[in-house]
Length: 118
Image 1 (tube, rainbow, N blue to C red):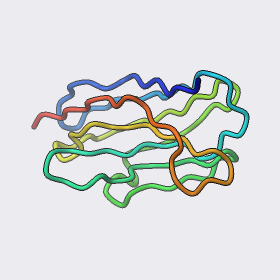
Image 2 (cartoon, rainbow, N blue to C red):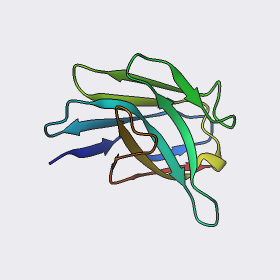
Image 3 (tube, one colour):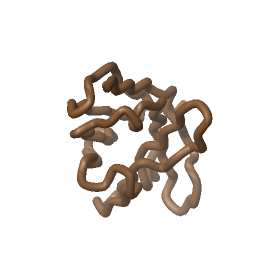
């Protein structure tokens, strides 16, 4: 059974940094895009960042220049380095993974809370 296990959320002051990790466990051989969405109360779900299996990346305009996504294909793990965090980054962050050839997420992590205090 495929699972995405997230870690790294927490509470940080504005201007601080956090690093999220997302590790795929189980037998899966066609790992495509990985990345994170986030959602906070009263707001629509937002795609934060994604990375293809060969390394090309995509970011939401709201995080570009502050967040960096990376992945280790040997460890089946993606990372999201979040710098210069702002209170508006407060949300639950959900890791996702596409199977190769899929156009939408096939698997999700359990979510991790990121809270940025002003």
